[in-house]
Image 1 (cartoon, rainbow, N blue to C red):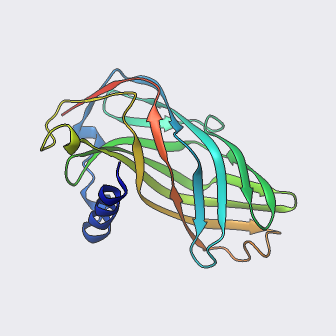
Image 2 (image 1 turned 180 degrees about the vertical axis):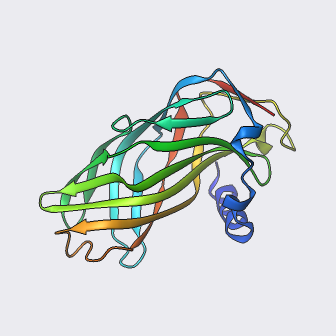
Amino acid sequence: MSKALRSALIGLVASISLFGLAASASALTISPSGAYSATSTGATVLTFGSNGQRLNCTGSTVSATVASNGVGTSAAGTTRYTGCSNALLGAFTVTQSSAWGVNVILAAGPLVGLEVTVPARGVTIASGSCSFTATGRVIVGHDYSRDTPALVLPVAVRVTDVFSVLSSSLTVDSVTGCSPLLTTVGLAATYSGSYTLNRAVTVSG
């Protein structure tokens, strides 16, 4: 995805609320159902809103089991991050503390995507005596207008299609011993990165 196109998509999301326009996953049919994994195409970054600090990870893989209606679950411990660090506190570990929700969605314009919901304290991030947890949602999507002028189902998702983060809303919901990186609960953060799937899937509706 070009920088200009990605900027345009992010502007669209900001102006009309992608969350509000995401189609119900129950209206979709996914084939094949079963186990999937999404692997980052490069680094992923968690950026804290108030201080601009970043938690960088060199790679990540999100695994999930998805039903034929597009609704899925990423079981605790199946999502993995590698090479995570922060300029202030050094190396971090990122642990999926509980199951995450995963939905295949349609969004405004010719976008097919995945919505990942992290429940309260659904991920634990730690470095030495510093430990914090977070909750929120992340949407990644692929723009199919490069292939067709309008979104027409079914869409054949290929393993080469790159799904970039279009929107994210994460909040720190517990924190211990993380000064000066973090000092209070409630700090907002955004997530960036891009992913590819391990196998092809057809989205119908």
